Length: 100
Image (cartoon, rainbow, N blue to C red; front, top):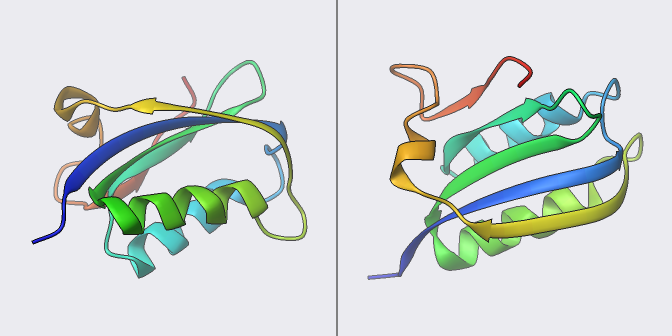
């Protein structure tokens, strides 16, 4: 059985107003990850991913590259918590949340 992890990331650069949250949600669902993504008032995007270590690591790299419309200048990551995972919308494995 693979190790399960929760990772929280914050991305800075040209990451808002370019369809990035929808991209992240689509890619996370494709990989069967749990979690959420949302804009932050300061112009960054944050996301939380929960799942097998290798799949979460792959997802973080997908976010770092982003689609063609995105430019990621910085990506910070840390261990996430089960309490943070509970922020997702009820009944959804992965959610796009309102701006925080």
